[in-house]
Amino acid sequence: MAGSSVVLTELHWNSTNWAKVVGEIASLEKKTFPEHQSYPRSFDDELKNKNNGLIYMEISGDLAGYVMYSCTSFSAIITAIAVKENYRRQGHGDALLKAVIKKCRSKLINRVSLHVDPLRTPAMNLYKKLGFEIETLLKDYYSLDRDAYMMCLDFDEE
Image (cartoon, rainbow, N blue to C red; front, side, top):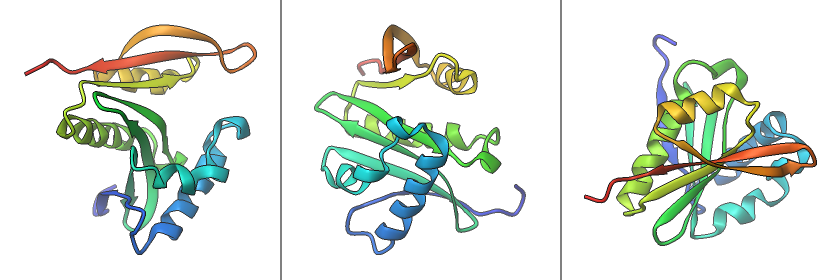
């Protein structure tokens, strides 16, 4: 999108635009994921947990996508990532993932993991491109007969 302004922002619970951003993200969640797999009902509480974080992307003021993650002492899990349909296949998912990976590295985290439906080929390809590797197959993870791969990105100790 030539001429568009792309901004990545970390959402903090005391941000003046908290309610607006959380509302837009909850709406995107509902459109992107099956009901049993989305967070909208507990989104506010999830984000107020000090171990959780969220980075969102705006393009010319429009929420384009987000990535939500949770950290422990040495590892993090990406709990959700979504990009609006009209912004997909333009590198925005890649930018969001790189931003969360950078954030995790700054916290001295040495592993980032995520779960992905094996049938979501574009997502699988994106994660592999960024260095994530399949660690295990989780049978019936999302629902009966709907599995997930757990994928991990390990950082070299420096």
